Amino acid sequence: DSSDITEVINYTQSTYAEPNETYFGAAKGMNVIYLHLESFQNFVINYKLNGEEVTPFLNSLTKDENTTYFDNFFHQTGQGKTSDAEFMLENSLFGLPQGSAFITKAQNTYQAAPSILKDYGYTSAVFHGNNGSFWNRNVIYKSFGFDHFFDASYYDTSSPIDMAEYGLLDKPFYDQSESLLSSLPQPFYTKFITVGNHYPYDMDQDLVTIDKAQTGDASVDDYFQTARYTDEAIEKVFTRLKELGLYDNSMIVLYGDHYGISDNHKKAMGQIMEKEITPYESANLQRVPLFIHVPGMQGGINHTYGGQTDLLPTLLHLLGIDTKNFIQFGSDLLSEEHNEVVPFRNGDFISPTIDSINEKLYDHQTGLPLDDSQLEHANTMKKDVDYKLELSDRVVNGDLLRFYTPKGYTSVDPSTYNYTEDIH
Ligand code: GP9
Ligand code: MN
Image 1 (cartoon, rainbow, N blue to C red):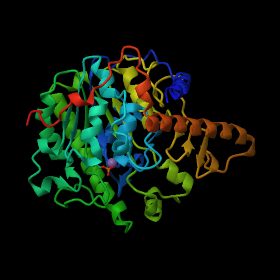
Image 2 (image 1 turned 30 degrees about the vertical axis):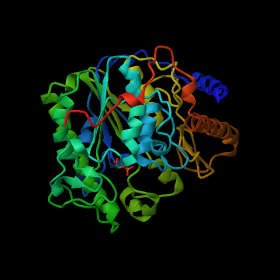
Image 3 (image 1 turned 90 degrees about the vertical axis):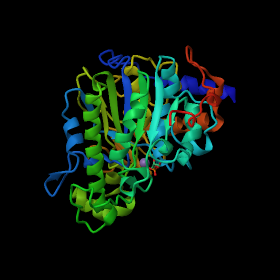
Image 4 (image 1 turned 180 degrees about the vertical axis):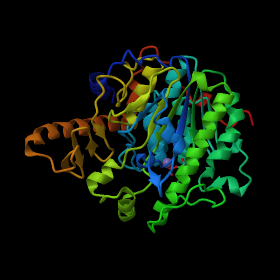
């Protein structure tokens, strides 16, 4: 009930990380373009298969002067997969321990990114070449305050060669999204959700430009072909944004949503990574790429440890919007006060010093069992992680944001949104 919210507010106030004045407002007033890297694990970045780069364009982004590439960024998803990634991205709230909050908690009160940005004149839209009811998106997006949701009904999905199992393939998807994007007033906040690189990663061999791997495990071997395809589609997006004159006034954020290769493929992954996939290695393979491109902002490779709940405070601070009064469970990755302990949905955590994986403690740098002298410190970290997850679950299960409206924030009325009356 409402007394719970006081404990939550005290907690999130205590974990708030203040903006880094070097970066605060670096993207102020810019458009935001999220490019969703489906099932993309970080091990693919700068990986060479038979001497050939799998993702040459993304690899080039790790060296782009205005792109910050985070190489210690982790997904924190549970059973909700993509929907958990979106939930965390838009709210800086964890998904649920079981099931998908998108499905079971769509009627909650949220103070999500689109609604926060509306107070700053932003128009928001999601583009996704799958039917709008998948993951209950067409319901929960209204609670998030998305102005538009361009689902498969806005796209030409009539030619089979353009289709993947969960909707339109990336290249035709992005091509067809262009006129929809150009119809939006600026500044806009947009998210493009792709499906090309989705399990089991099989692709029409007429469309592939790199060989499969040769482990004998099909979903591992094929993964490199769909990852390459995703990379090529992203490169085309960057080229088109420049041609459309949108590149210089847009912040582009690329993020992996969750793992691609599950723990059932340890043997094949051991060949790919040339090391045994132990529980420690498997947890450390949960890194997903995060690239933040801001025109005019000095980029580089940023080794800060973080997760998907950290994206919203990071994004808002880059846009010059302070997050102090919002209930957010992550913290700004660029802040000097950012907490580098990365909680996972199952209570495990990874940090620059200590990892807790399946109830076992490790020295993060060596992967060896933790020295007894560190046990007390590790237990404190574990308690903090458990408490953070518990409070986030209390907010989502108790719909507690009903009881707290941040100063200056305009609440959302989901009934005012209708995604079918848009331009067709
Ligand atoms: C479905 C697409 C894939 O619309 O986003 O979802 P996933 O299976 O990755 O959760
Ligand atoms: Mn996904």
